[in-house]
Length: 316
Image 1 (cartoon, rainbow, N blue to C red):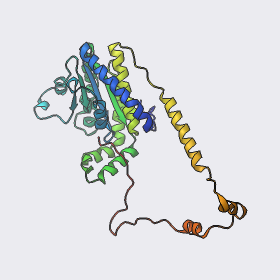
Image 2 (image 1 turned 180 degrees about the vertical axis):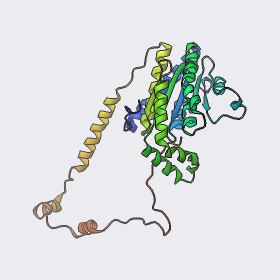
Image 3 (image 1 turned 120 degrees about the vertical axis):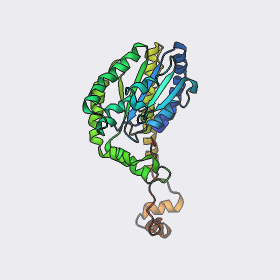
């Protein structure tokens, strides 16, 4: 699944602004139907550090009724949780009928972090694949609807985001020492992710790998998958999606026309126009001076780094 993922997919800002509000309205309608049908829903978000899990969850829940969902962040098990079966704490968090539970990381840490960092013996994390499948099958038999997302970015993109966050004093806390350690083991985690997807992608609880390089496309793809999955589970008429390709093509045409217009030489008037046509080698002294005069650049003070270009980075 990972090898078939195109990480270069992107969505134009204008298209994003047109389609996402429509998606949010549809999600609100479906949330009400989930409550009316008393259907439990579980949405799992896994992915690389700095891939945008938190940002995507905030966008997903932005217009939802807060009484109909709960967001459940998953951390390392506490002392009393370690004295119980490892899935016990997740059984305690399953949603009520008619409620949506959104997991920011989940029980899949057993076969990811615990596997790569050596926190769980090999026989136990191998056995965890079937334990997870049994857990999800049991809930699916009780009409629970599953959606599982892996937000995927490349190693180079993750490094770029880490460096950007680390250089911003107000954002540096987002990147901890363990995040750098996980980045160093990117290839080991990649192997664990491949095994996880291969062993736990089932008809009742399928995985969706989302290209997360472009934030607009990531949000659109997650929202659309949630909508389509709920429409299918609730047996309601699917919404009519706008032709995104047409919108994108229209934008492209407009951009080409604008570029062509900018390249069109402006018409000069009067004697200057005639002189320019008859004597192209002669240039007005003021114009010549303006052309030859180098542009001023702002030099950084001694000991200060040069200003970096602005960039938008997801914080989760």
